[in-house]
Length: 185
Image (cartoon, rainbow, N blue to C red):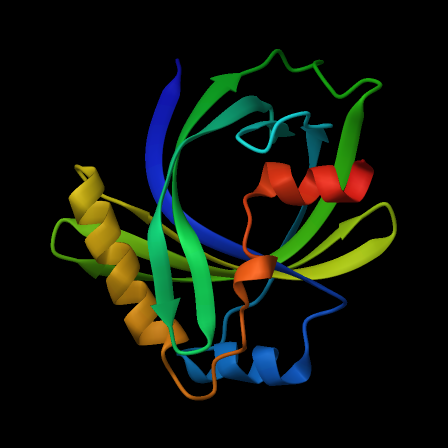
């Protein structure tokens, strides 16, 4: 069985471990959430608009369909991207071979539901090739692009427009394939 998901999202990658101030901001947003750590394998990308990963027994392609208008909330600035993701189950013995990049991520998420859409806030520490980065992502979905964009705006207003939210500059905003390309060349 193949799963398909269309999302509207913004994502930032910043060098180094998650700063204490960003960690404190996330903690103030709601109940304590323990981080979930996992290791995924990504095919070294050759295109910023196409990613391929192996996660928990599934092959997951992800394609950027559009780069839309800007999102600005507090000190966060990014172009909104629309992505389509698929998930294909793999045989139990399938695994990464040469050319795949190991990425370990510890993430925490929050979610809001607004009208017909929902938006998740993902704050992560990501390690690839020994380098540690931190990432903030808003990922929204809904029955159509307008509902997803509305949910994204609601998430940005709730979480990123706060005065204690971290600075997330436009130059740090990019999808996973673009960031991974910058890491593995």
